[in-house]
Length: 494
Image 1 (cartoon, one colour):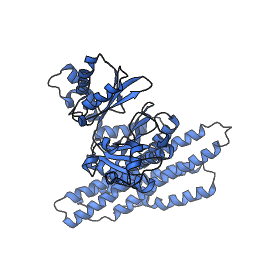
Image 2 (tube, rainbow, N blue to C red):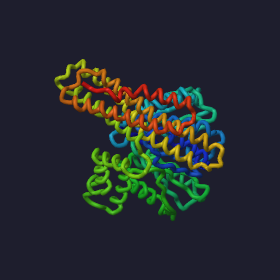
Image 3 (cartoon, rainbow, N blue to C red):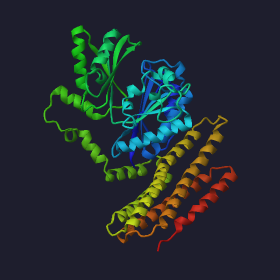
Image 4 (cartoon, rainbow, N blue to C red):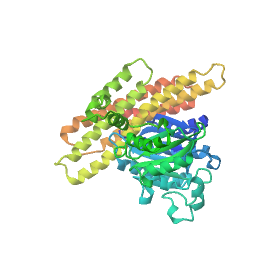
């Protein structure tokens, strides 16, 4: 699976309950892994970082946008950080095998959904921008919520890329983009002189004629009574952290000002930190890829052999999850993947006619969608079991405990039933494909068998959970549904 990093910034940094609700919007999407949540009261802003499969990223970002719209009213929002939206910025960032074109595609999908379904104007920025003057986020956000409210609908330069040509009355507007990794880096100065801070920020940033690939803004930290230079290194290979600090020191030391401390906001890539160390120590002939231990380990851990070991170890340990339901989804995913491989080999063969090659590409695309749905069931099954355990842990005197247990048990049966349904769908689709190369037919047939195993294992988990369901109507419906897929697991290939 290909993953993308998502770093939505929303305009709430003080109310933990609101922050948690917005973060849970992303967490509620299967396959999403929350990496970091960093809130700042002075900025009144939260930076959320998560990774998601490509086919889940837009939904997760959309839920963050929707929750932000519901919970944040910019008419009452006060904070030091510039903002024009409740969800202010929503960038997609390529990681591992994902490329920037994937992220641009996701940004446009998200922008359209937000504009159409939430009625919030959306501006595409950075690599996703369709106008050169919108590549720079600072230009897109110029005037912030209050200024944009006055201009949008009147100034043709402020017509959004998606959504209505008017400000959302409480949620403002959103910048949606695709960008490369950046470094959000703050420098706190031992001074309260904002006039000097403003002049310094202007002097060092790119737009003021300073360092390339650097954004900088002066901010007064009320809680510390000091000036902060809030900087963004948009290309840390061009302008490094050390170069920024050296430039700031050159300006402040003649005035007797010192740096009290610095801050890294959100998650930061390893390389700019290593670069800072190498430059500070004046290390010669340093090889980043081969001299950093973690890089070597990452390469080892990313091998498919190591991944297979992790899955087997997870299934074999004494923890209740992952269990049989997740194993069913793993088996089904492997089966669909094997058939994909057989189709891909056939499509690439020089002996395969061009018209068949084209149809096989379509087959691969459709089967991949089914496989990705099966893959989501791996985590869904584990989550359903966790819900069952949470219900049983409720106090016995709680009148809602019995209802919660029944609800959790019904869901715990429906999740593997969905896995069986998807595996059956993959089998039905695959059996209609003709013309697969003979030398990959064993892979194709193995894929069918693994999908059948997925159905058998999934239905076992349906039936075990039926014993704890009291509603006879629901129980009968689940049994009837299970019977619809059981015949695929008995199919014998000729």
